[in-house]
Length: 412
Image 1 (cartoon, rainbow, N blue to C red):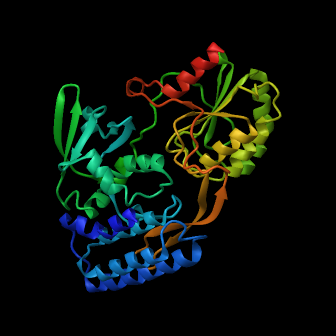
Image 2: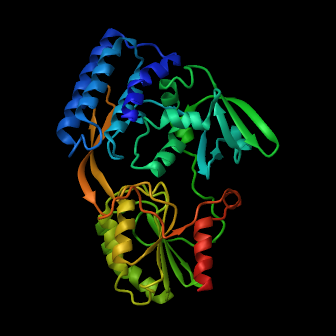
Image 3: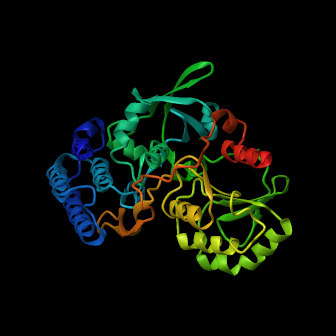
């Protein structure tokens, strides 16, 4: 209920934004879009009120319609984000980025409680590695409190943190929340080894922002990634560790896995690897049957230590199908999970349908299936071997999780 009340108050919180209120024509168009949104939620979601009571949903919609005369478009979109977030599953989301948008020119990543800049456009590369302390006077904890009620793609506290790292850069979201003002740069405050730095930062285009990343610029361990005909999956053979390492970054089609299975098996037999690592960190999902096809391809290989030598790597961005495969690989491959908890809930609403609002063209998604993958009540797949990324390792290109796991295998 606290989340619902917070969402209802977002219109008041966002009063600092300077975007112009909707005119009458825009109000009517958005009113039609809101009616469309409500119809789809109530008829297309497999169980729309599993977390949010229908009466609370109706109240939030009524308040939104009543406030139309005072809201700007970005404020209205923030309200729709909050309502979608309140539905309570990560596959039901309002996509604010389906309209024109800009980003602040950074990628952020948490290391423990510290949020650091891990990439930036050339103009601000001197800020990489610094801790973010505040934006326009709001601390990271205050920013987190405001954004947490609207963030999309959230199943638990781990995917919430991952979503925050990304959406903190979305200019129109911060504008709609009243954190930044239209047409003005935002004042960012950072802390580094030599003290604090403040800078006035303006947003950049999605094209420029899209060049940035938050994945490891990995130099250790050294990997020789080989294409195996399965788009999104590469293989590195770590002969020193007798390990076959699969970087499962995104999902191919199941038939692409099956059609290249014989060649993959031949390559693995030739390498005589004993240990198997499937890395699902950063994988936001796809068709989990492709993951099952990969497991079916690997299972006939007797060379692997199927009792103690199979591992899956996970983190807060391991979501949807990637989370499902994490659970499934524990069961059918007898795998142990290493890393940090998944961003997906083993018992989750999934397989979303995506809709476009008839006037604005903005998109939103709704869950249409439910998967209970765990008999026990849980909010994540928790690792058997907890290894968290370390900033000092990250800074020099060392993959903490994979490196520590390989050390364990060497000691064995």
